[in-house]
Amino acid sequence: MAVLLAAALWTLGRGLEATGGLLAEATKMAPVRSFLWSLIIREILPIYVITALVGLFMCMGIAHIFHGKMVPWIKEWRFIHGFATVVGVLLGLHLLLWWQVPSTLWLIPLLSQLPFSLIFSSLLLATLGIWALAIRSMGFCFRRGVLLLAAWGLICLVIGRIPFWASSFPPVSPKSALGEAKVLMVSLDGLRFDVAQSEGLGSWRGTAFSNVYTPVPATRLLFGLLWGGNPTQLTAGHAIPPIGDQEEKAYPLLDAAKDRGWAPRFYIDDGGTIGLSGRSSNFDEVLMPASGWENFASSNLAAFVPLFAAWHDALRLFPGTHPWASMDTGLKSALEQGRGSGWVMFHSCLTHQPIYLSRSELNTLGKWKDLKPSQLRPIGSVWGLSDGQATDPRGDPLVAYRIRVNSILSAWRPVWESLSADPNYRNATRFFFSDHGERFFHLTESVRAIGVHGYDLDPWELRVPLVIDGPGWPTGRAQHPTSLLLIREIISTRLFKNHGSTLSEVDSYPNPVARYLTVSTAHLRPNPYTYKELTSSLMASETVILPGGHWGLHYRISSEERGAYTSFAEVTADSLTVYKPLLDTDQYHKIIYDKYELKSNQIISGVEGNLARRRVMGKLLNWH
Image 1 (tube, rainbow, N blue to C red):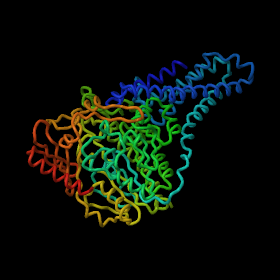
Image 2 (cartoon, rainbow, N blue to C red; image 1 turned 30 degrees about the horizontal axis):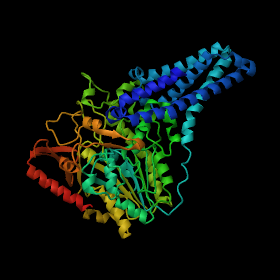
Image 3 (tube, rainbow, N blue to C red; image 1 turned 180 degrees about the vertical axis):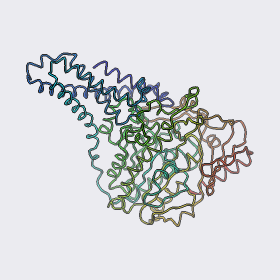
Image 4 (cartoon, rainbow, N blue to C red; image 1 turned 120 degrees about the vertical axis):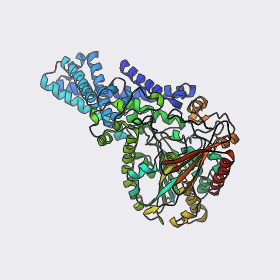
């Protein structure tokens, strides 16, 4: 047992090293180390110990029945029998979990270099072989031994399904009913417009907007804007909040909604992406799997400890995004928990990278069993490339992203369509959107990097889907370019003017603009220009993790300087123009895209760039 538990801890340790970036740096900090040890002692070890003991006693009990001599035979049970039984049970359970989500095998050394077909056949033979040797040494005849072997396999199947059965129970009863929902916001993190369209969103019920841009490609900042936050402040930062910015935010729309009895409720399946820990007084209820940065342990590291991942949702108040998570559980839980609230919000991070494809998702690749798990492992930087590296197109991270988006949209569409008949949501204005897109850089002509967001201003990160359904919003398309701030304007209209906006009013809003403190992409592509922006290494070294789920960044420049460091963009029809300030000069790099195609780029003077900055700021304030 000690050997098996040590192996589980070693796997978790590898997870800490393999995650890289901010999380790897965070593990050097005392609050994070303390939390991780607490998690190991409080949940991970008990789950493995209890599972092993339950499996052992169930196998012993059925063996005694098959032996036919219940009392005397127990004296013949030896340590080696128990050890072999437990090894077989845990190996069998992991086999079942890996069979559900085979791509998580790329995390396991040695195994990741073998074809999937060889891995699963070897693990199955190993499980059965260990049990067969144990059964043979117990003195069972061949017929009874085969039946016992089958019974133990059935026990493994039952134990393996228990955590999923436990997590499928309806959520705790929602708060007392206050009335029908007036606004429902459903958002999917990192959903690109072009991929959303190609994977089926275009056929959803409601008014589908085909030219929508986020004002800032960061979840925390975007939601702050949608809740009525100050555009000047919220577009001059980064996804990670500044240290000292932990106090409650002024969100006028949320406060107005509370004053009018709407009781706003917010649900998220990865709270680390928005950091509401300690800031939830603006809401009637906030639910997430864990507080703040602690979500990374369940979303990222759970892949390394499959049994912990299997039990994760059963142990949490709200479902998470671990590799074994169901695609629609979080959405259904949020809708159920939100009953009685006038403003219900659900944000999902099921598209977060890396994406571990399930067996059903891998089936869409065709002949995936001849692949090696390592061929599905995404590469995070140019430094991760090996000489002459080529990749099977089935291992392209953009392919995995498309497959996952299809899985989510396919699972969510029936739920979305049913809302028009739901007594609690049928009269609500219902928004489906994404906070930002996702970009997949080419490291070589044949190798693409893992998806990233919150780095830059470009059509892949800024252009997002938006569907609005409900009274006054017919099924159809809207072509006029607009901003996600349209959501805030519509909610504000319903709050303060007590009537719903209509499609005909959309054209009256200004064209979309964006502003953001970008992050260097030098680890993903060579760039001849050096911009005024953050770097990944600086962010990692300056990030501070605090107890209670709080985290933040020690900015080396003041808030006023951050405003001058920001890149910004403006949209006209299908054209996106991006301005990036150059370091050590007053000049700007001006980049123009036509949809997703680069049309031109040039260096412009500081005078021209600053005129564009003032123009963008004026349009941004027009949305305020």
